[in-house]
Structures are given as structure tokens and as C-alpha cells.
Amino acid sequence: AKSGTGGRVSLSGVVVSGDAHLGHVLVATLSNGTMEAVNITAAQYLHEASVLDASTSLTEPKTNNKAVIESDEALKVMQSMQPLHEQLKPLMTKVVASLSTMGKIVGGQTKPSEANASSIATFISTKEKCEQDIVLPLQEMNELSSNRMNVLKDMHAHQEKQVQQLKNMIDTLRQRMKVTSEKKMIAESNANV
Image (tube, rainbow, N blue to C red):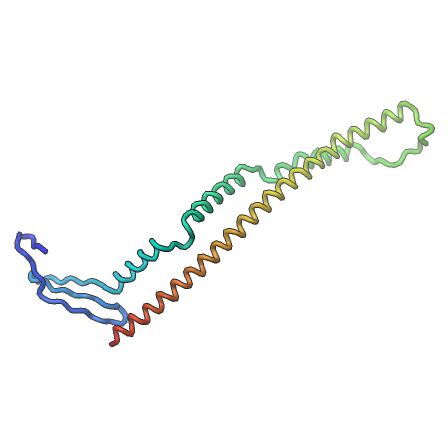
């Protein structure tokens, strides 16, 4: 090392402390009187963590990137979808309004053999109105509900997959914590020696 005045600074002395709380600390005294301290234990842990991180990640990079992209796409799809209740409300309003305007529909007193053109026309009109204003909206509500159920099933499967990935990550972290704890105990026992 060089001093600020252009002269060379040399190493005067070195000592390694083995403190159980601090770990191994290297203290170097330089010829200009300054002291430099380096926590060797912390440096070792940082080095091992960087090596471990570079060699094995919590999840495989391709899977992780793919999972992030899939979750982003799922979120975009869900945000772009109109809420189900908003889709069903106009249809339900139409069905309710149609039912209330029809009044009470009961079996007629007219026998089929006595039906005339007027009663047949009334029947056909009522049937068409029921199909148009009640049956078709109910079928559309059924289709909307079925489609939403399929989306929710897909989302559920995707979330189960994410939960499993999180469980795997937790297991990996627990294993790493165990290894780190064992290394810490070894380092503390070495410090006491």
C-alpha cells in the first residue's frame, strides 16, 4: 500500500482474534500507525453465499421467469375481465322485469279443442316473450358463469403450482439455515480453541 505522501506503507503487525460473538477478525497494523480490521467470518459467509447463489438458485431460473410471466399474464387477464356481478346484473334485471310484467301465468280455462286464433296468438306471444326475455338471458348467464368457473379453475391450478413452488423454496431455505447453523457452531467452537 502507498501513503498519501508517495512513500510506501508496510505491514507492521497482524493478529487474528477469535471472538465467539464477532467471529474471526483480522487486525493489521500498518507502518504509518493506522489499523485495518477485517471480519474473516463475515467475509467467508458472504463468499459462500455468493458461490451458493451462483451455483444453485431457489428455483431454476427458467421456471422462475416463466412463473413470473405467467402470474403477470394471469393478473392482466383478471384485471381486464369485467366482474361477474356486473356482467350478470343487466341480464338479471331483464329477467326480473320480464317476469313482473307477465303477471300470473296459470293454466287457461280454454280447452285445446276450443282454442281460437286469438288464444293461440296470445300463447305464441307469451312463449316468444318468455324465450326472448327470460330463457335467453338465463342461458347467457349460465354461459358467463361457466366461462368464469373455467377461468377460476385455471387460476386455482396456477395458484396451487405457486404454493408448491413456495413450499419448495421454504424447504430449500430451511436446509440452508441448517447448514449455516452447523457452520456457525463449528466457527464458534474453533473460536473457543
